[in-house]
Amino acid sequence: MKKLAVSILISVLSHSVTAQLIVDTININKLDIEYIRLTGCDIFNGFSRQSAQASVWIDFGQGNDQRTNKEFLKPDQQTRFSSTVAALNYCYKNGWEVVQYESGPNSACHTFLLRRRNPSTK
Image 1 (tube, rainbow, N blue to C red):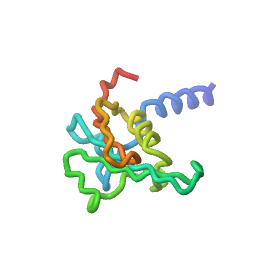
Image 2: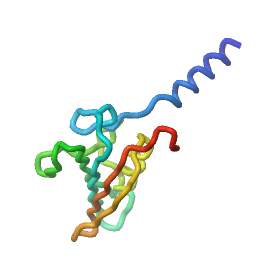
Image 3: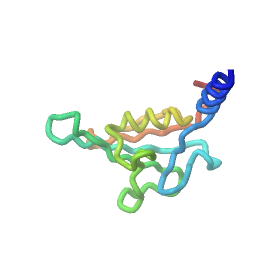
């Protein structure tokens, strides 16, 4: 019975914990902001999707100078996302949704405006 209670407690706690959205050491989920801009440039190495990566930057009001801002990396591994869509999925799991999309002159780079989702929305 004790093992069952511990298992249930761990399950409940794991669902209430959300990952962090860290940009240059700042957890933007804790900031009082409604919108962020995600810019992603997919990098293809030859014809293999296995080796593809994406350079991703997030602007949350600090300015989006890609020459000086640090890339948005996977927090658990500090590595690049495999694609811009992988970064968008990560943001969605952390409470953000896409509200606008723009494509630049370079078809490998895309910009997305994201809004903080209502907590009741899954």
